[in-house]
Length: 159
Ligand code: SME
Image 1 (cartoon, rainbow, N blue to C red):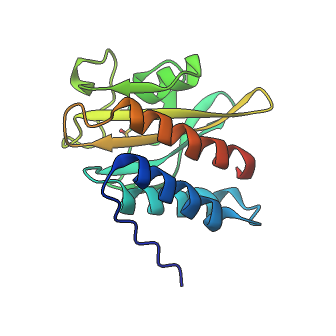
Image 2 (image 1 turned 90 degrees about the horizontal axis):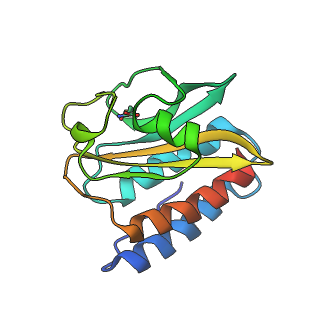
């Protein structure tokens, strides 16, 4: 049984604990689906004020839904469309304070108001994007972005 209960008082400690928990969860496991599933569950359980955490995989130049926690979501997203598609096309983190103001945003859960999408690249190829949604406007800070980039570094090795 895994019992990662992370209750850090500050964001830096939260991401430090989350990073080491993720490292432990994926250590020695080569199966990408298992690793994405556990990563989504761990992040969803740990971060406050999130309503969707999951992955979209690069399948032949199109984003296709992968393991996630939250409400059922749209399955296919073309590169360049919405927040996830922008992250895939530009390979830049998308940290969006108000997704309703984002051109082409794809609404999967009406409760979502802000979003952080981190592209995960290995050997020059986009492998997946990690998508985190929150019902709170401007939920994600530069500290969240830096923390999630560390999570992405770990995942890049095991996806
Ligand atoms: N809102 C996303 C779509 C994915 S869902 O949030 C799970 C977007 O515009 O890319």
